[in-house]
Image 1 (cartoon, rainbow, N blue to C red):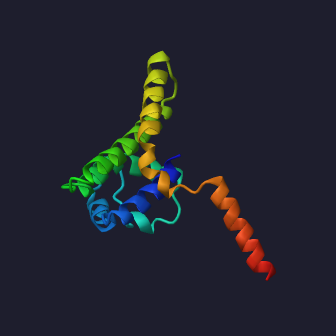
Image 2 (spheres, rainbow, N blue to C red):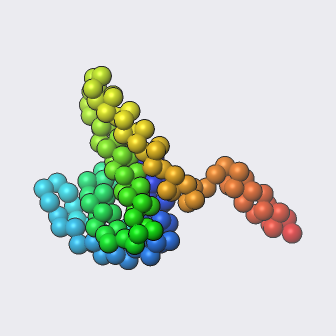
Length: 146
């Protein structure tokens, strides 16, 4: 799920013309404890492996919050939804990494997932549905035949 969110977030930032600010803040994150400093801009990472996702998750929401500062009145709601959506999925991701779970941690995971589903609509326009994917495959096949 995190990999999908990363793609949606990049498209969202491009659309709102905040990708450059996000990348600048992303690259300025200093190394800390067991957290490596990003070596590439967010959009330049071609393959998000498990270790990179874990490291990125530790500062994604903070970087996003900084990049989306001072929104216009029309952007404020959309930006807040994007931040809350990312925050919810990151919380879920961190809870899922626990070695064991009890009723409380499972409830916290469930709450995080519910919040994600509440706010994910901000990224829906960037999702590729199965129908669109199938249409693309069919068009590609037709063009190849021609």
